[in-house]
Amino acid sequence: MKQQENVTLNRALGLPAALALVIGTIIGGGVFVRQAAVINDAGSAKAAILAWIAGGILTLAAGLTIAEVASQIPSTGGLYAYMEEMYNELWGFLSGWVQIIVYGPAMIAALGSFLAILTSAFFHTNPIWNLPIALGSIILVGILNIFPNKYGASFALITTACKLVPVAALIIFGLFYGHADALGQSIKGIHSTTGGFGVAMLATLFAFDGWILIANLGGEVKNPRKVLPQAISFGILAVLAIYVLVAYGVLKSIGAEKVHELGTAAIPYIANHDFGNIGGKIICIGIIISIIGCMNGKIMTFPRIMYAMAERKQLPFSKQLAYLNPKTRTPIFSIFVVIFIAAVMICLGSADRLSELCIFTIYCFYVMAFVGVFLLRKRNPEMKREFSVPLFPFTPIVAILGSLFVLISEVMSDPIGVFISLAIVALGIPIFYYQVYKRK
Image (cartoon, rainbow, N blue to C red; front, side, top):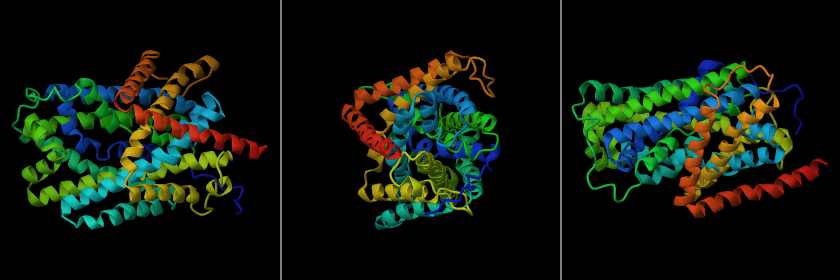
């Protein structure tokens, strides 16, 4: 296959598109389904709100830290490119390997499966259609991203605007029409079976996941040294405000005891109870669009890691995976492969577990990237930075401690999963050295 030498990724994404991708990729289903889990673990409404705030602050610390790295290494591939630049080629490869083979496809597959379940629950379709809906959704969004990146970016802007409809409805109704005691309630008889504030905060951290993926598009963002830090910082701040207000609105609408009683059905209950049948369906459609927008962000970003690795000839079939369509200037074969892996995971029904397995290793790479801020400053003390992390070194230290908290929690709660995740990373080592040998 002949790659035209002058074909490059299209640097067409400005701040609005980048910001929409950050917000749209973070806000998927987590804020709508984790309300009960956070309250159950926190034990009271006030503690639950504090857990959302704490999770947001830790995520913001992480985002501000990576924003400084992104301003100095504005390359396609995001975390993969940072690891390679700050450490070496092997560490870069391993961070990319786990994202393209398991983590990214599993996240996409989980969103497709969740979308199908929501469609069935909201519109009472036959569950037999769940598999075709899940597969069809990721394929259609994948096809959209084969076209020039401006279409995927426009779709991100539209879905982000649409997903703010249910968000705004929950917030406004709760603030102005809710009559429950939003902060004074506690959940009776629950602390004996749940993990407390730390576990509640962990649940919120997972709801903030996806903030770093815009960095994968470093080669397609206009003025990335300036725009990437702005998109990451402002995007996380916006999501933090949205999540806290949604949590407060839900508690104000029906109270902590009712949220605990309903579990994951709390939001659908509010939608139908407070907004009527038609209003409830509109809210539900907004939630479905939110899932699709989140899926679009992940399908737009994860294949760029595969493309960046193939461009460096680090993967089998690198020539094909690094191919850019001359008309659309998108890595079409990398997109196909990521979608194919996600489709297999949907068919096997293993997406959720596989995405959970990768959390430990992903956070290991996060810690290394946060430490990398100190390394970059030591190596380039005189370098002018477009963005410097505020309150250095306090902010990176908070990011590191927050990630260490996640790692320790994973070791304690799922040691077998941690072992499997490390084994997945280790499988990439022989492939890396084989590709190095081939290049020589």
